[in-house]
Image (tube, rainbow, N blue to C red; front, top):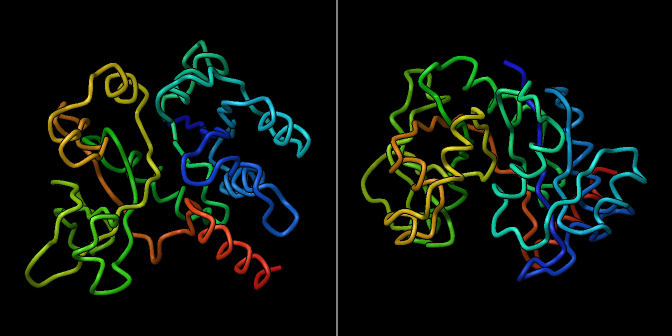
Length: 245
């Protein structure tokens, strides 16, 4: 297995415009994400940037970035465009798609994602889940839940479904973490397909992969990494940065 980590980022985020360059403890958020990915030491790390300002920030920090078409409709389109530029010979058979808004993501989370692909030959796409943080998560449509067929050790499982709906009954509820590891062919197949009926219904793109027959496995993280999607999230990230400085 020869992985590459790609981080899609663009300035035109709907809820927090310009967030890749948002200052968190004196460092642009995208640079923090880049450094966390490099710490995992999984392979090359490249930012798939939709804007020249992001490229400049990454290169000023000593990282590598590729400028992609700002009009690309999704993160998977952006990482495929970057992949074609940085690896035209297809040397990297695994692509880790790390979101550019997780400034404190732990190296172990990325390594666990890659380990699923190394361990399970049937795994086309790897991802992460974390335990629910409160009982309210079960009925919150903003919390994406993963329904898993768990392995005996309780640390990973094959995904049966993802949903925004309420889950009933006894047992854990797993919050989905939007980090993916793709076999290269699975990424290409997923990206070439149109949005699927379940994807449109739940507004969850991973359901497109499942409707295509691709197999998704998920590893259990102890907690979900901080994700910055709103001004309130950004303030929480800045507060967290002050506690770990």
